[in-house]
Length: 294
Image (cartoon, rainbow, N blue to C red; front, side, top):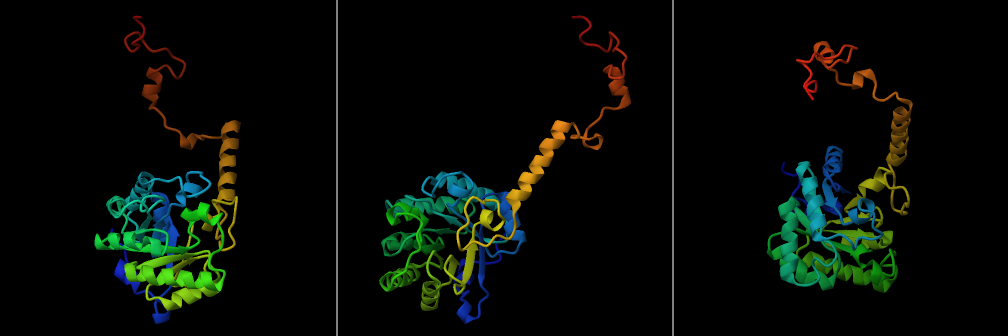
């Protein structure tokens, strides 16, 4: 199924020009992709955040291109109406332009409509190479999780005038290099607004305030599936982990009490077949019993 939006249409969705804010959510498999699509989101991000919320790692550095291809393909098989963006994972676009384009192509062949990478000026050659291969590319600035070791943790970025100006410089460079949109993560509201109003492509915020051109949140955070930690910028719209634990507990209790499965949850033989097997107290005849000659 073709998505409702294309990269050029997304690139034109600036709120200051009258565009409606973009809605993006992560999804990592077919069921979550169907839910996000049916909810009416504009974009799905197959994020490397799957390392933390699906695979149990402490950061996003552990996922490989093969992992991203696997999950991107699962999302694509759901045939969502959303525009699908897949993350290029750590070290998949750091070595050479050739390797970068090959890795981006793997994600497109898996079903993505675009790829996303993190970083500013230092990533311009890679962004240009991907764009030259006619693959839509989304940028990602601010708190870039793949830089967690260099940043010393998951910390808000752009908090000083100098840092904010550097962020703006990076944003302009990414737009000029060919990005059709960019994620702004973990920056002060004022910086999110400043950058958004200063570039021609849309910004999609996550912890970047209300004045970006769209918002993105993690599927598991929005639905309360992941409840061990709640970032300040997350708003939970459900408590599915709690509901799930309660439902699974009821199932366990029913199994232990013998109330599951009930009569209407079982398959049955016909009376004749049951009698032939001796299930009603009679014994199968020697002719019917293949074990009688043993």
